[in-house]
Amino acid sequence: MRKNHNRLYYGAYRHKNEFRLPGSLMFYPTTNENLLNIKKRYPDAPEMNYLADFILQNRNNCKFRFQGRKAIFYTNKKLAQKLVTKFWEFWTGTDIVDPRFKDIDANTVGCTRLPHGKYHYQIHMKKDAQHFISDTQRRALWQFLERNVDNCLVTNMGLIDYLETKIDYCYGGYFYVTEEKYLTPIYMLAQQAIEKVIKFRKVENGSNKKTTR
Image (cartoon, rainbow, N blue to C red):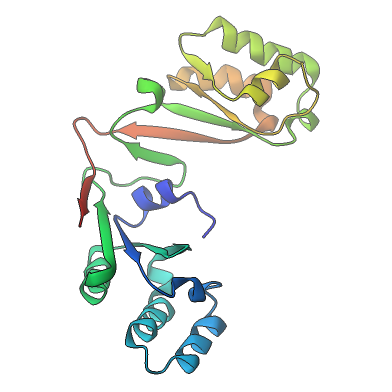
């Protein structure tokens, strides 16, 4: 699963369940072919067969990933309950998104605290940004960010070195701005070098409900 898990979790599937499953490494890669082979090789392993069937039947209705012996599933409430009921003895924790996080698109992240306490936008630069902006534009962008230091923050040292013209190549990175009004001059200076802009939406007094064993 290549999507950003946090955005996926908040934007599409509101229940995140983690399990510590023996034999979970055998589920990688999670292709249909491999899952069917697992069912053939282990006909007397009901848990493994159930998990293989679950993925085969619900692949389009959930997302999942395996990390070592840890299996993580992002689902709706109904599928989450099925997984926890079936794998109760292997269940290690559940996160549920606050119901006030809704209608979040792919480039919006719901949060209970803004990054560094105040930044609403995260601007990602392309890894080959040097091909899309001139040195003049690069210097102008850095000057703008420095002039607005109270509302703009660059935390990536590699990106700072590129913007300060200490190195000639951009290896990606991102910086923050507090308000939407700062995006317009940034776009004017470097729109072709920007990969994406992430918006953080805060819910007042919101929280994630976390349940662990």
